[in-house]
Image (cartoon, rainbow, N blue to C red; front, side, top):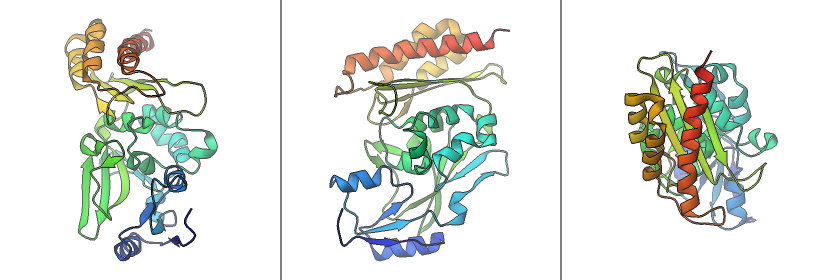
Length: 285
């Protein structure tokens, strides 16, 4: 770690933006569970850390006017995982959050930090994609929103502009009540990045039900398998095998120390079929 690193801890968003404008080579700090290891290895070398955890508005989980949920950028993952409204309305997000590291890490890591790190294997990203979540951001030029479908631009890259600060992640009311599972393969039990992650969800309160299939660690960014979703919505669970093939076609996996591209693609098909079958078993009286 550099010995001359500057550290600032503002108490308002405006102050945080002002500090970053004074130090363009700086970085915003939330939990630091990704940023600090990257600094130790020399992958990141910010001139100043602007810590956002003292900003009260970023530490809130609150209901939006239309019945959705806003999760502040500085809310720890542990709070997201255990929050009663998240568990009641967006249970798949709580399930995905529970797979990130260990409980002590989730006491520090944040939802916003997890997606800003932009790992293709980000476990929380699949739920946010499935729920059509929106990222709120602010800069000296004003506020804007970014749909999760356009948030990731590549491994380690997002659509955020230099100096832009994520304020919250908003789960829309239209995505409440999706049931399903997050099926995850890794080299070992415990803390490890996903080799393959597949979320399969369905909104049973609608006719016909909406399906969601989101994939992690099998493309340059987390992705939705939209063609597979549309097939299931049109033909139901009897089309699970064909939907699995479409999900496999949506992948662009790599071969690395966690698994080969061929293995990853094949496992996407296996897990999509398994996820649809699990939905059917849950639906039976």
